[in-house]
Amino acid sequence: MDEAEASGQVWRDEVRARPTAEQDRDALARLVEVDADSFEVELYERAADPQVLEIDRAQRSKVGQYARHVRRLREHRHCQGS
Image (cartoon, rainbow, N blue to C red; front, top):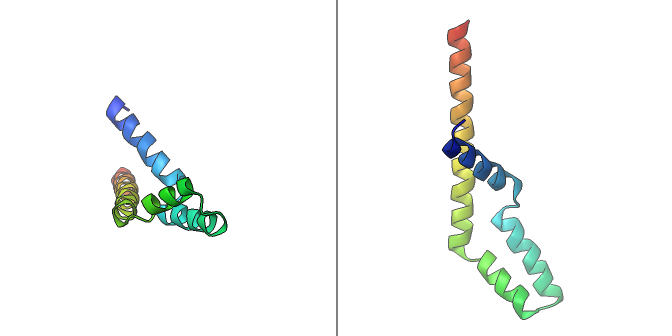
């Protein structure tokens, strides 16, 4: 695995491991509901930004597409090896 592939794998692993933007938004909404601290409100506003949500969805979609692509390549190689 070259450096670019390794870097891509690290990024994909990080995207899979982190909570979704929607989960972050919902957790921050609960915090703001209890204690409307100005910093928490600022974090919530950022997490609720439609652009942030769309970027998160796009990144997760890309990771899923790549995983399906790799799986299909492996299946194809397996079928040809038989």
